[in-house]
Length: 174
Ligand SMILES: CC(C)(COP(=O)(O)OP(=O)(O)OC[C@H]1O[C@@H](n2cnc3c(N)ncnc32)[C@H](O)[C@@H]1OP(=O)(O)O)[C@@H](O)C(=O)NCCC(=O)NCCS
Figure: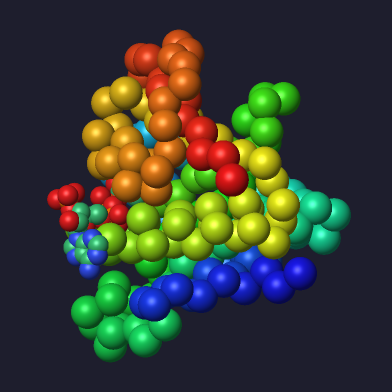
């Protein structure tokens, strides 16, 4: 199964050890970690574990964490240096199935990149990976993320308590 995904504007490839610094920089930005990790700052060791866990899951089950970049990056001065647009991935949600997650560097917000990247992951999950459904869990206050899952055709099916308030669960079936 091919694990590199491409869209009109983006390329998604599984994270590797070489992405450690970029991932740490990206995920510790306040606007990125607020809803993704309930504001927590991930340690370098936790990032290492995320990367190795992703590699294990890709090898065993075909899913994990992708790094998202532009197919034609802008010059470094405009793209902010690393060319990293963000991340997208699949991970277990309790024993319910796999949930989709995504994050964009603030400079990449408002261009449709999250919907484009997450859409590619969703199509991969429901297509080649063969999942019957994909889940998402979004903080009620994360309006931008709720808009992403709705644009992807995911429908709400439940609410659970979260650290920052209620979290809405969404699903899309094949
Ligand atoms: C959630 C998050 C990824 C959403 O980012 P986003 O930029 O709002 O979402 P998209 O990339 O899909 O962009 C959609 C916006 O781009 C606009 N847009 C501009 N050009 C576009 C284009 N060519 N194609 C599509 N949309 C385009 C859309 O109109 C929309 O704008 P709107 O919000 O004013 O309606 C971002 O806020 C983020 O990274 N947050 C931190 C991490 C996080 O919370 N992750 C989710 C945890 S559940």
